[in-house]
Image 1: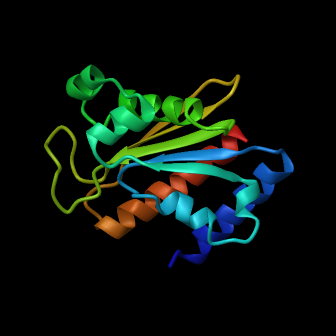
Image 2: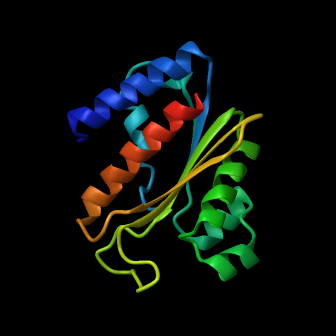
Length: 162
């Protein structure tokens, strides 16, 4: 299901996180739970993955992660502000000590001139550390390709925070 390079990166993240006793919570929108699903491809993932939130709708982001409605209205679901709040909410609503949040436009529709298809925001929060954020501008490379590129970028960000 996942390309070898992404599977290998996920295994590396798992090994490093388990070694350092880091538990991860995911908060996913455009990837629809694929990142959490990737971790569960491997035996021993319960030592790493604490829980996953699939918050595809704005209502889910608000109810499950505490993303404020005014932030969603002012910045839109695909924004740095929302990604950061998703990461914070995942950390606060779990027993994890690291969270990763992704929100974006995977297409084929849904883009605008200001936020075209392939725009993705990723945020990673870890207790007692500065939060990381990255904006990807992937272009309209295809829904699956956008989602896989997002997962790969998220895994790389997790490695930095571990």
